[in-house]
Each structure stands twice: as structure tokens, then as C-alpha cells.
Length: 145
Image (cartoon, rainbow, N blue to C red; front, side, top):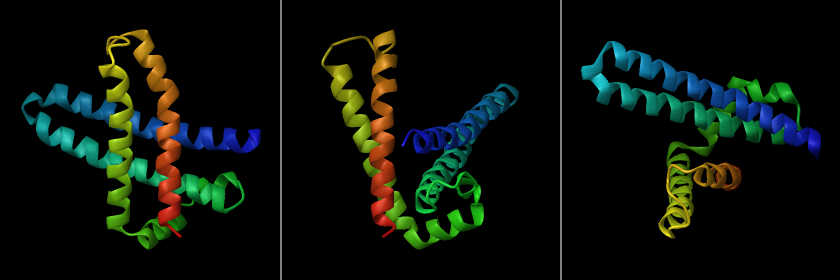
């Protein structure tokens, strides 16, 4: 169980590091071309969403192949799996995931428990985000059946 969780964590860290790199590149491009912020933002969201989609597919492929670590980076199989699921189902999953995360964070922040920029906000986000990711991953897995 611990070994499977560590593999999942490493896969998520790998894919999230790519998303962080995309954001970093977008910020650098924004510094170079400050008038093109809208286009840069749209491209960063698109590529970040694409990588996030592959991350979910990689986690599913990892679970499907009984935890074989290299299966999380078998992009051809992941692409076939995502094609099988279909664009509409993936879009519905994204929408449910975003709504769930928004409702969780908004309900906590609007209760007035703490300010948005406080360390408590960071900790709550750190504790709740894995549950939202698990919810999205399981919804994604159920739609691939």
C-alpha cells in the first residue's frame, strides 16, 4: 500500500513539475511580451490542462497495470485510453472537479475562519486538494469503464 502511494506521489510530482514549468515559461514570455498576456494565459491554461489530463490518465494506467511505474509514462497507451473515454466525458469530469474544489474552498473561506492569504489557508488547501484530486481521478476512472 505504501509503495503504491509513493509511486502515485512520484507520478503526480513529475506531471505537476511540468505544469509549474509551463507557468514559469508563461511568466517569462509575459515579461518579454507584456501586451500579449491574454493569449499567453490561454495557451498556458490549455497546455497545463493537457498535462493534467495526461496525469490523470497516467494514474489510471498505473493502477490498471498493477503499479508498474513505467506504465505511468506509456504515452501511447494513455492517449488510447483518453480517446476511449472521449472528449465530452473528460470535459464533464473537469467541470465536476472544478466545481467540487470551488465549493470546498469557497465554503471554508467564506465562513470567515481565516483570511485567504494566511498560512491556515495554505494548510487547508494542502489538506483538501488531495481529496479533490482523488475525487476527480475516481470519477475519471468510472467514466472509462
